[in-house]
Each structure stands twice: as C-alpha cells, then as structure tokens.
Length: 422
Ligand code: HEM
Image: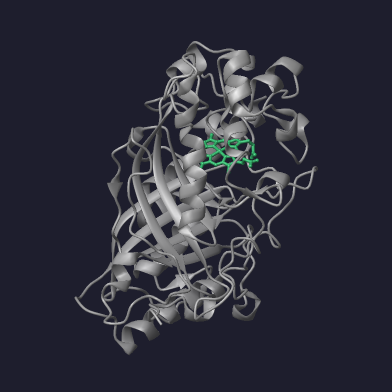
C-alpha cells in the first residue's frame, strides 16, 4: 500500500515537472529519480522518413492496441526574423533535430519527435505550397465554437514514457543545455526560432486520476484509478484508428509526410461525473446500445481491439429510440474509408493553466479529412429529434469546449528543417 502511494506520488511529481518545464523542473525530476532514467542512446539512421511512423516502435497492450507514450510536450516556435529562412537557419535547425535523435533512441523508451509547419510559415516564401499538400489556415469547425487560431511557424511534438526525457529534449532544443542524454548537441534552435508557447500533457493508466485536482473535474476524485484519459475510457483501439499508411501524403515533394491538426479542448466534467452513471457515460461516449448490452466494462478493456461500432445502430436510430447519441457512434458513420477512420488520433490530457484539458493532436493525409471527421462529431442533423440538442445528449459535446486550433504540415524527415514550399 505504502509502495503504491509512493509510486503514485512519484508519477504525480513527474507530470507536474513536465507542466512546469525548464531547467529547475528537470533537475528536480532527475534528483527525485536518483540520476534519471536509463535511456538508450539514439541512432540517426534508425529514424524513419515518415516523421509520424511511431507505431512500429511503440508498445502494444495485450489486445494489440498501440500504447501511446505517457508524457508529451508541444512547443510552438516562431522564426526570429521576417522573410524566408536562410540556408544557415536551415542547417542549424536540422542539426538541432538530428541532435535529439542521436541522443535518444527512436522509441517510447527514448524520444519520438515531429516538426510541423503552419500555413503562416509557408507565406514567408514567394512560391506557393506544392499542390500536392492541403494546408488551409485553421478556422472554427462548428457553429458553436470560437477558437483562437494558432499561427506559429513551427510546432515540435516531443513524446516519451519518461518525463525527464521530454523536459531535457525541450531544454536542449531551445539552447538551455548543451547535452541531451549525455550526448553533446551540435546545435539548438537558439537565435533562429523563438519558443512562444509550450503545451504539455500525459496519457496512460493512472496519470489522469493522479492529476485530477484541477478546474473542470468535480471534487471527490471521480476519475477511475486505471483510466488513461480524464473521461474515464480507453481510446485509440487498433480497429478504430487510421493506419499510418492511410494518413501519409502519397506524392509530390512532401511524399511520406502528413498533416496535423492540434486543438486545445477544455473539459468540464462536473455533470459527466456528477449527474451520470457508468451506463449513461457509456451511452454518450460509445452508443446507447453498448450501455444496454453492458459491453463496456470499466475503462473499456472488455472491448479488446475494437470499439464494436458495428453493434451500434445508425445515430438517427439511437436519437429516435434512446433520445441520445454516442460520440464514437457518430464518428463511425461518415468520415470513414474501408471501415476505418481517416484520422490517426494521438491526443493527450493536460493540466495547462490549472484546467483539465485535452490537446487533440491528430494526423491525416489532408486537413479536409480532419474537417470531415469533426463535422461528424458536430451531429448538427441529429437535433431534428427534439430529445437531442446541439450539445446535449449529443455525444460528448456538452463537456468539451474547443479553445484553439492549428494546422501543420509534417514534412518527411529529410525535409523537416525549415522546408521550402516546393
Ligand atoms: C475529450 C475529447 C475526446 C475523448 C475523451 C474521446 C474519446 C473517444 C473514445 C473513448 C472513442 C471510442 C474508442 C476508440 O474508437 O478509440 C473515440 C472514438 C473516436 N473519436 Fe474521440 N474523443 C474525443 C474527442 C474527439 C475529437 C475532437 C475527434 C475528432 C474530431 C474525435 C474523433 C474520434 C474518432 C475518429 C473515433 C473513432 C470512430 C470510428 O470508429 O470510426 N474524438 N473517441
């Protein structure tokens, strides 16, 4: 029991350190671990050309579902000067990113990293972005949201099972330390790119429960001990994710790249936990038929590798028969191809700003794949049934509030350093 509590405090501490960031958080982290985790060194040649090719090196659970790395940082950067980047900027940024890959093994035990560029970055050039890439500026994607639209040049996503790794990698990238994992960094972003914002988070059994003392989660520790996400259920089942191949750009100068949407969603789970029981939560997250059949036990481990959407009736039918429609059920209707979603979700929870939130990070071949998926989630047509309102009885819309949106292009690894649009 004492051991469990110690382990719990240790993990809470690690998460808090990532959220705080910086050199002091990092040294507190390593001190706590008595020297830091034993992290395997990297090898640049082991990094795949597809920056988003993570699944092969990630662990799988007993059902074959990919297990996401536990700690995440998304750091947003701007070029320090106007106009397009110079050759020397490019070399420096390339060396900094290569440095991280040399320092840490390309895996959840080491570090997974992607660099993505916004449509605003590409406006710095005279040439237009290649026709083979769909990269519109972000916009509101439902009539009931008013998000801030993110316009940094670049977002770097760092992910690892070890909190000190994401912290140290970020510090090395911005130039606050010369070594990463004991390996000398040849360069940092310093002088070329300025960090304007950092977003942090976590996903995985235990972490949400340990970090539920934030705005948006009611008192009484309602988040289940073993839940990987604040809302209490597993997500990202193998059969309910797009494949990495499906989300990869197939042709043109950015072939082997992908596009990424990153939104920030605030969670308000007072009613989710205060007014609903397990069955109503299952009905709204999955579908009312799943609640009726008892298919979803606990966090959803009982589902194996498939959320079982073929056992849910069409959303309109659920609206008519149950007065309620599930999130997953809505998502599994339109925005699909070959019986699979067209976006690959890599979202994580967050306590940024002292509020429960979710950084919804997803990759897809085209931004329009995300837009189409989000339209399915809006469920606007379902309100034809008077029991279903725009945000009530309509999946999880009642509890989720989109605050920010941004769109990015993740070039292939060989072009990840300040790419030219053509
Ligand atoms: C707090 C926010 C969210 C939570 C907790 C959440 C959770 C879940 C869960 C538990 C499932 C069912 C299990 C699975 O298939 O992995 C699911 C499915 C899904 N969600 Fe979400 N989700 C959230 C937001 C979103 C957003 C913003 C989108 C995209 C617009 C999205 C897209 C999807 C898709 C595409 C599926 C799979 C549906 C299919 O099988 O075709 N989710 N989500």
